[in-house]
Every structure is written in C-alpha cells, then in structure tokens.
Length: 99
Image (cartoon, rainbow, N blue to C red; front, side, top):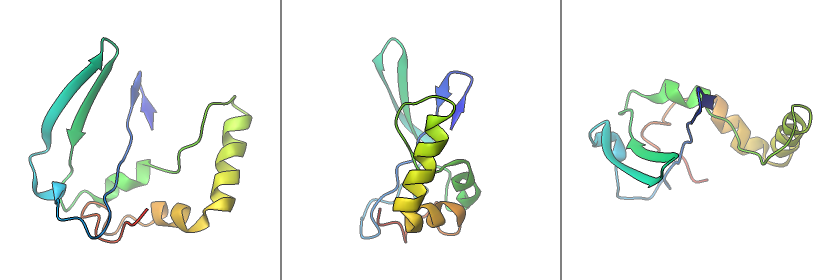
C-alpha cells in the first residue's frame, strides 16, 4: 500500500517460528538506511488481523495499465496466496502463514 510518499509492506513469518512479534511493543525498532528511507518494525498485536486487508500480492514496476495486468497474472499463478490475503483471521499471529 502506498500513502503520501510512504510504502507499507507486510512480512509474515513461517508458522513454525519461535519468534512472536505480536507480543512485542508496537514500534520496537527503527533504522535509516538512506536519507530517503526509514524502516520501522511495527506490530499490531494479536487483534490486528484487520490490517491484512490493506495488503495484497506485490508486483514489479509498470504503468497504470500494465501493473494491474501483472497483478491479475500473479493472482492467476498464485490463487492460494491471493485467497489468503482476503482472509484476515490469524494474520496478526502469523500462525498459518507459510509463504
């Protein structure tokens, strides 16, 4: 998702990980990798499942016409991954994510 010059990306953890970020402080770390890039590790807690609804599969560069077509192609190639983005249940706990 992109808002006022800000890109928000989601990284999910494998189901068998021992790391549980949903139990951490909301914003626990931050790094400036360049003068234009600021990365923060943000968690939304176990009740943050609804946040998953602003995310979808990621595609590369393109125009207003080619990027939606790339997204459609990715959805057709990975329908299960796309279907999981539509179901917010358990997303914050990352218990079922294996992709």
